[in-house]
Image 1: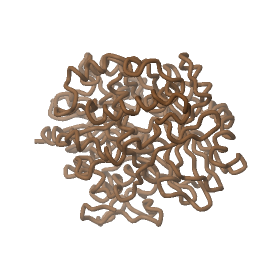
Image 2 (image 1 turned 180 degrees about the horizontal axis):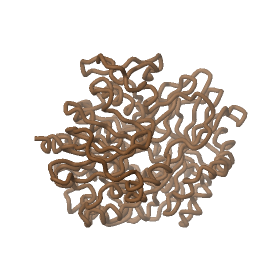
Image 3 (image 1 turned 135 degrees about the vertical axis):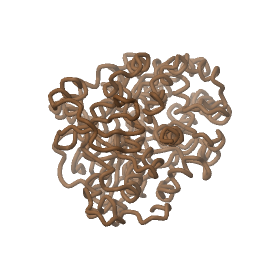
Length: 581
């Protein structure tokens, strides 16, 4: 599902105890199982909390709005049937960045700067929006290549239900944690989320509660209970903080040692040969959360996610797109209209000839190139994009970026004209309870691994429901399968084959389906590969360049989570401000 979902992450003043938000209250939260307060007037909203259609980019300025904010919101209204894939759009960035020199030459070369800025932020996903929020006093310019902001944290609204197209939930923070103080509280999202109870699993067509007590095999519950006890122990006593913390439970040597073995090796050393049901659940979880198999994932990263599931999970209407929507609304109030620039593709980031600034060259919505001279730049884009943007970057840094691998996934939303039970947020599909070691074959046979009740966060709906299906592609070479729009009918057929069994778990039938809407995410998941953390690959890839170019993204660390994006934005802000003098 790859929902940027759960890395229990810290910030400079965030203690580990704060980090483990809701430990007592949220233990066993999943069965794998799991209005602004800033003082200025925020954008207007409709009855659902959406940004109202007439909301200008800056509501308190005597300037004509540059755009209708609702048209750029991370949560879009459903106004008709989807005509193709939602989510990633590949054509424009591929044509420009994978042939950068030719593209720039065709457009007349790099133009001289037409404007100057203190900070330019490349990327309008959660990382970029959070960075802009932290640096708002410096009036940053935010450049986003998609028509809407939010990146992977986007959603839709249909019939009064807000649901996720990608990132779906977060870890419940302590009341005084850094992320609570810096983001959740000021944005007001802490008043909207719901904390998830323990979720069921589906095995052989049956819904089962109490997975960690051995509900799927009552005759052999011991290993399930030992696994849960071990993960709770990791959470409380031996948690691998990612991003790492000076006062974390594991020092650098211990974290490197844990990173040096795979999650499968580590769990089998602790628990013995895994029960087939436990093996299947953990494997599907890793496909969904990391886009990788247990055998290739770092034990440090895997335990960072798995243990956090026992700390308490919260969900918002619209998933994590709700946070992106709140950030965008605050920025639209705080910044000039021209500061938020959608449909703007950055094609080059390089030091100015005199070394006094950084030139950011971008194509505007009409395709015209222009350059901004910035005193500092925040690259809030994946490293595989950054390496295309940075001619002349240090060779060893580009090599580190090149070592990072990414995986794809698909999110399918079922719009249903009947209410579905909303007793739990997430449901893991275990098939027949067995998974083979040929990961591609096993994944293709399984298809959808888990289902989010998209209507759960708002307490259900009297007449409708939305089920959000996650289907990962946990092998190299899968991304091209999603590049071509012509692959959508075949994928819809594959998803449709699973629908009767999935809907039956909710007491529904295919007759209740109004529409199947598919979002593709071709490279959203950085693979948390064994050994890369200890070898310094991630650290080198994210190192600032010349103290003027900074990297803030979920792939700064092997933890593809919302908390990584927010924490890195919070951590980087002082360094960016220092660069500004």
